[in-house]
Structure formats: structure tokens, C-alpha cells
Image 1 (spheres, helix red, strand yellow):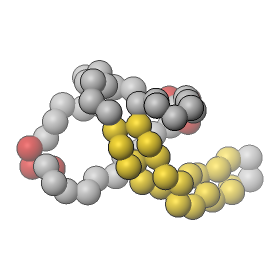
Image 2 (cartoon, helix red, strand yellow):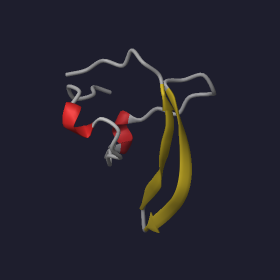
Image 3 (cartoon, helix red, strand yellow):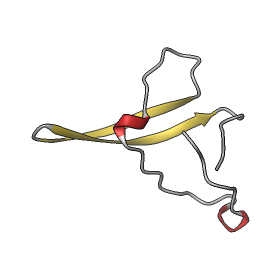
Length: 63
């Protein structure tokens, strides 16, 4: 996953990050970060998962 260049005006603020399912790979503990699922919306064949990214390890590639 490529992350955008850091924006100083967003430092310390909450942001919303949208991630497409084809860009996500589930991994055992010790992966790139920790995501806590809060709700799951079943929309027929699709599901929307809402939650909070609790920990994101450094070293992810940026655009």
C-alpha cells in the first residue's frame, strides 16, 4: 500500500482512510499494523467493514 506524502496541516488530527479490499491482505499478528473492527455492514454480496487503525508500523512505502 502506498501512502501519500505527509501533510503538516493534518498532524494530530483524525483522518478517514478508505482502502479497497483488493489492496488488503490479512496477516497473523506482527504484520504491518493492527485494525480493530467496530461494525460490519452486509450489503448483499459485499460487506463494508468500519473500524480503527490502532497501530501502524513505520517503514511503509510512500508515493
